[in-house]
Length: 314
Image (cartoon, rainbow, N blue to C red; front, side):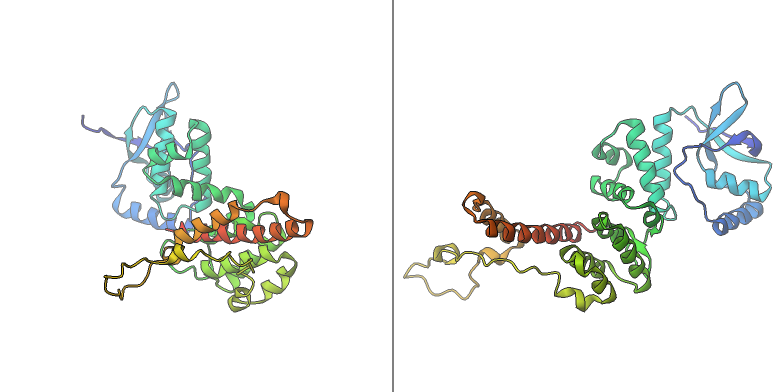
């Protein structure tokens, strides 16, 4: 079925009040308006009819419509479609997720609106939008940050931060939600000292492990934080000899290949740590041992959270 494009007066078109995009860069909008004034609108916008009022509501293309108003165009090309609310919301999300200039916080708010209105899980929403469930989770996590910090987050995929707070920085800042004043100071330090995400991860981990030294850590730099990001852990029990030994028959020639050990693979190290933790018996601990164990486990939790974030980065 052919798509019909109609010329509709700009004055008969209204925006969607639930459009995900809240802010539009005036300079960029003016540039688009200049282009429309010179070349006209080459790509139609999508609208749906508002019955009984002879008006149309934008489904896709609000930025072009606003630029058309600035350019003084009387009418613009439109594709008129009857669209149900779910389809309209999905179309808007897909269009805006593909725009690099949409602020991450606006993207997150739009996803949250879609989740609430459509009653979708992260997995369902990811499937509908054609992105990963992990990416949906990352974007929604921005809503956990204080608004004044979330508003500063920019999208800089595969580019240096250059003093900006990126979405990756935000994942570490979120770990300081229970320390809002310190969190705000770390956000400022990211900008003033142009911290990359690895440096931010070390600073946040150091602060969480030694919150009483937050001010001192904030005055320092990456080398100063390194000594505070590796907790002193109790030594592991001695391994049984057969756990890492390779049995070679007497008749076999000696092998020059390295003998595989439990630490040959990172996942094996983690699995072994889990096994050892499972052997702890709180009922047999003294009060002092319990306190010490809790402190070490808290440090391990901080390290684990930071490591997860680093392993899950795109």
